Image (tube, rainbow, N blue to C red; front, side, top):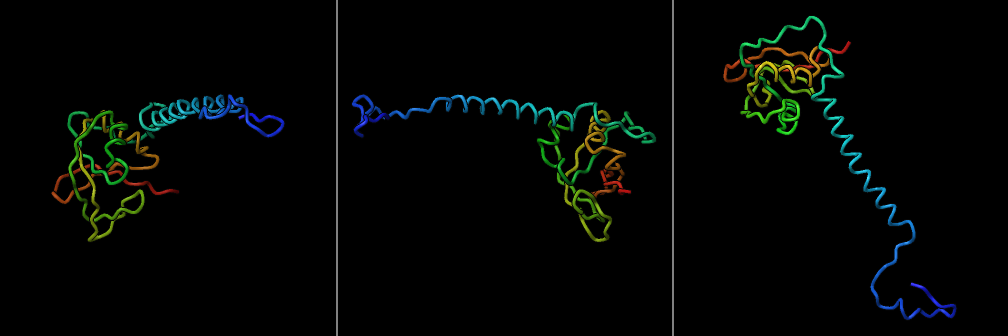
Length: 166
């Protein structure tokens, strides 16, 4: 809105209801809009590197080979209970069912052996290539170990437990 030297408004500025942007204000919004695809691409790259890519993880020597001739049951009690996380890690929508693991208590990111305790979780069945993807996600041999456990319904399933930090 412009004013005359005597303080009155120009007739052409009255009542048009439009706010004028200062020069350059429109350009600032466009610059911010470009940040969204960059942030999205960065998040997707991070997710790919963390959960799927062959880079950044090498299984330590001495780990037992995965039996490719059978299916494997896996008991999960943490982030892998989330369907979207499971989908990103395994590449599939995997059906799960509720399960309990007696004799263990969840302690942060780990399971601690504790008589009388019960850990709530989910169990699902996967083939060897998907188990290898789960191993990569859990950083088998670096952060976690995969151990057999007996669930409350007497089924055997793999469980990931934190390795002792030295």
